[in-house]
Length: 164
Image 1 (cartoon, rainbow, N blue to C red):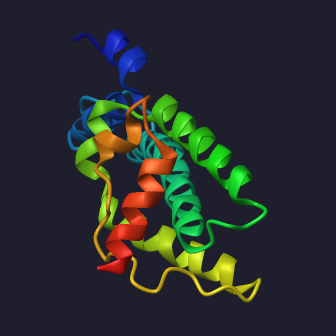
Image 2 (image 1 turned 135 degrees about the horizontal axis):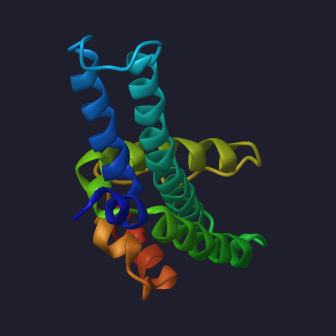
């Protein structure tokens, strides 16, 4: 795949590739045009890739947090809103996701962050969240990115997992 196609199809992989190329060029000062700050350019390009990764993982955390809140307080007046938010956040994650990100996404860490957010959010209203949420991510990345993700089934699965 050429650089232009990679840029259009997977900007995260493109950013990694371009940052590595700039770093190689910076290693040979004779090859670089004078005045070009290759080290900082490489860092900026790498940061672009990190920003793209955050654009995919941040909505995953939010979706997972809302799923945990739904499992913890399914009768909440906000339950319908939370369910809608899960779908919106997953849509945002799908739009931002690129296949090259898979190896960088630590779903277990995202799940732990989401569980903490859910616990804090429910606790602010005096609601005890699901006490036995799994420590490992209860969903795969493929499940979360699937267009047919079923919020009700996911909540039921979380509740069964929490019950032990």
